Image (cartoon, rainbow, N blue to C red; front, side, top):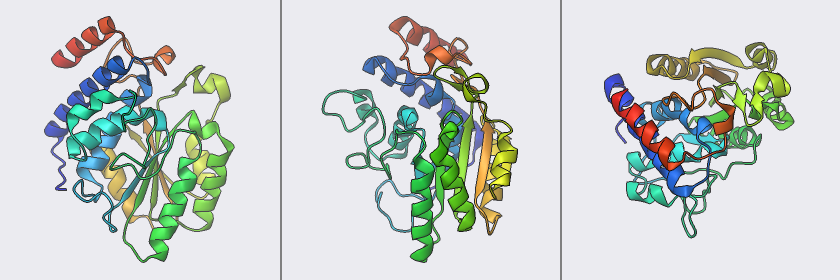
Length: 275
C-alpha cells in the first residue's frame, strides 16, 4: 500500500484509532484499555509509514513482517488493519464476540494481516527471530518488527531470544519496546524492576535507540536509523503513557485489563473530540 509521513494526517488518524479502540472494548465488555492506547502512534507509524505490505495480498512474499508480542493490545492492531483495508471497519465491533475472527489476542488462522498468534507473553521475540532468519535464508529483503511490552521483558524467554538475535547477528530484526512503565499489578519498577533497560539490551549485543513513543517524527527517525544498522539487531525503547489520550485512563494500572464503561466511553470520546 502507499505509505505516508504526513504528520497532520497521522495525528488525526491516531485520534480515530483511539475512538475505535474504546468503542470496541466497550461493546466487548472486556479487554485491555491502557496498553492498547499506549501503542497507537507506534503501530500507525509502522503500518502507514514504514512497513512494506499489501492489504490486498496479505501473504505477499516480499512483505515486511510485524509481530505484536504484547498480544493483549490486539484492539489497536485490529483497528489499524481495518483502516489499512485488510477487512471491513464494521467488523471491529465484533471484538471478542462468539464466532468473530477478532479474538482477544491475535490469531493468524482467521484474521488477515496477523502473522503469528501471540498473547502468551515473552514468546514474540523468539518467533520474530525465526521469521527474520528465514527471510535471510530465503534471500528476501524483508524486515521483521516486533512490539514488546515492558512488563513482558520480565520474562526469561525474552532474554534468551535477545541473546539469540545478537549471536546470529540478525540485523533485519527491529524490536520496539512499549515502555509505559505500568503493568497489571502496578509500576513495573515495583513489581520487578527491569532498569537499566538500555544498558541491559546493549550488554546483550543490541543497538539501542531511545525515543518519545508518541512523537511521529522521533518514531520515523528511529525506524530509519534501525534499518541502516548492520551486524546486530536493534531495539527502539519508546517512552509511552499507558492510557494515552484520555486523561482519566493515563498512568492508571487499574485500566490495564478493564474495558471502559458506557459513562467512561462517553467522557473519553468527548475528550478525544476536543483534543
